[in-house]
Image: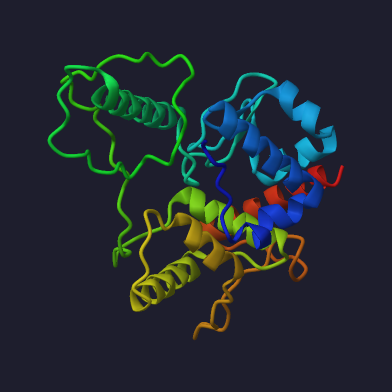
Length: 278
């Protein structure tokens, strides 16, 4: 059976903390439903309402754990009107519907070959047992699988999963990574990072990953968690952060395009927090 993947750092992630235990419980339960029914991350609206309340659903969409129709996340598909989509479902390590069905079909074919080789008269036994399949997790074959003799047909081609590797020295966060980190910082009451500070934080992050010989398929999520809590060092110019309009000294205004973007990220976080408390 397929499994719904939950990261071991989810318990302290800002999105889960802001959503609260009740909404996270709904997120986990719906994740089990999605994995069982192979929806590839799509959540039927009627199922969401059957398992959870309207405030819980609103909190999940407000913090970005779910998307509703019309969302702006470039990595996630659009759900139908009234339905939802679990943010980064495939990127979190959950297998797709095609992968699960392919794995089940290969398991059924293996059992058909074993039955045919062991009981059917006149059938030639294979010269050697097949090598274990690294993607075979013991799924049961479909109940209506035909008991037919094996055919000399090569197995279907599989798309290899990307291998984990060390971070590139010139790696850079995506605009979505930067936006998510700035929103989380604003929501936690921390000042935004300017362009120079983002560069410094990224260089420090890369050095740490290289020193630890860390390996990963993608680095955006780790960088966001790093940047959300990073406290930049003071620079020789006498300061590192230009205060938000309305949050800093009287009359303080963002002094650069980067600071204006950070102020906009803070305003978005305030809006998400207000909607989540309704």
